[in-house]
Length: 229
Image (cartoon, rainbow, N blue to C red; front, side):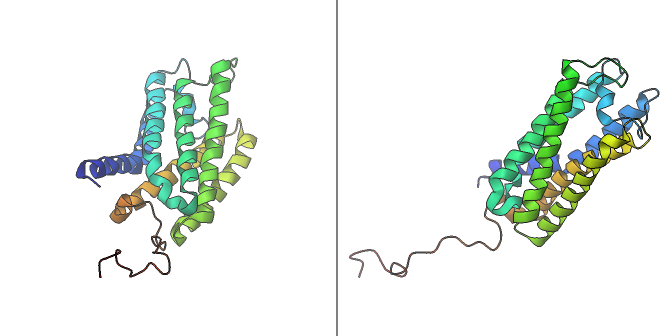
């Protein structure tokens, strides 16, 4: 692998690794700058709702985060073992959903819904389902035990939070549960990228540990080229 390509992969992994922290900080800042906004009862996406003072900034954050996930997704296939392609595709779908959420804002509660709001809701459902599926794939086919344990744990947390979430609408827990979903998904993806950074050797190969390259067929092993003896 050339130094240029390797450096680009490192840059993508670094961006993906720190993206959950940057996302959380920006959401906290935008929330603190938005009068009347409650981190407990309101969703993260409501920061980008029409009429909010920092709606454009919030939507930009969602779109950029989605782009970072899409660009970094191809490097995360290692964690899927035999199902590497599915992990890449599902994480990429999650990234696309993030972009759609930013481009199609949802109106604030109590306001008349519109097409943009409907698209927004569908994108969140599709994105959430995709990342949950990716977690499940890693939990089943991850090449190392840590991958499988963490994948299973995050999948369980995500599934439970997704089931509880609709029942908390209008309560002080609505925003809290939504943040559990966002933090779990974004944190898991960032963690996968960080593990790849710590195991630098994985950057140069997509073959999971424990798998050997195909060996020469019986009868050919050790045999020299014709006429060499």
